[in-house]
Amino acid sequence: MQPERRTVSIGEEGGRLEILVTSQKLAHRIARELEKAFGGRAHYTWTDREGMLDATWTPPAPGRSAPPPPRAATARQRRQP
Figure (cartoon, rainbow, N blue to C red):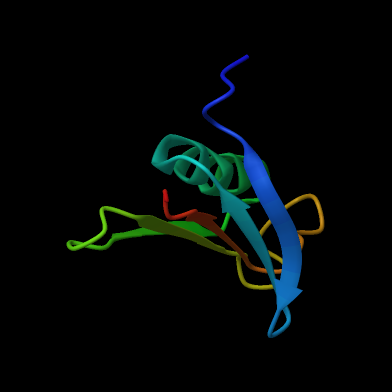
């Protein structure tokens, strides 16, 4: 267990699932695991100034994956105080 890598919150924003986490690695892993499990595409955007990561997963087009995919999701790293 790595206490520095935690989920801060999970909520819905604009019809999308948003997961706020404390590390870039955890945000990256969540998007990658969704991509592996359900297909679709993971996209990663790092901010230059703050060094934060927005990891976004978009589900595949209907009929392209075996299990029914969830809604799109974004995992974001929380800013450190």
